[in-house]
Length: 191
Image (tube, rainbow, N blue to C red; front, top):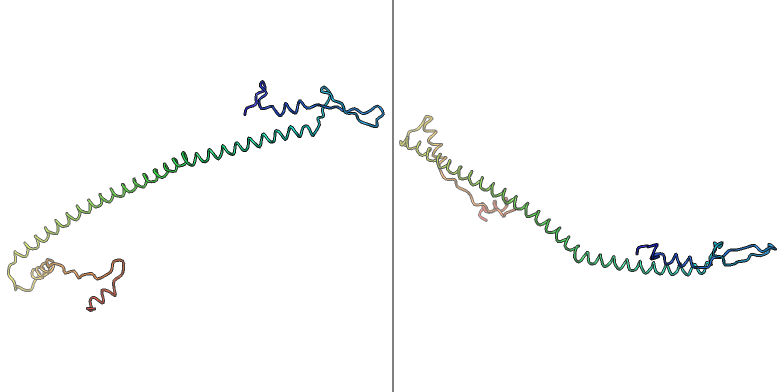
């Protein structure tokens, strides 16, 4: 509520206090008593009981306004929680989800690029192994004689034949996530 001096809105209780009778006090000529008389011009005193009635009315109105204010605050809070508050919370979750999705996409792309690079590297390594194996086999074909022993060429031929043999890989009896030492030992013992 706004206070307006022209319409007197917001000055109701002040006006009520000002309408209370004002009293002045005079000492009697004998000096033995005090006389009270109503005087709007000279009186500066009001009856405290009448003033208390006006203040009580004002306090009742203040209490009503405070209760109304608290109701409005609860209403705003409830609506804020149910509408805007939930919207903002949902927006925060969407922002977090989007940020995580961006991180996931970036990691996935980096993994794809690394995988592509690894695939190309593996392909190149396989191509080079095939090329080297062909060269070694071609080198062995230059020396078809078996049984010639001794010398650096024979030693190199033996090393080349050993390098060209396929690897034999023992099966792994280990449980994933364990050292598997005891299981491998038992498997090798035939238990």
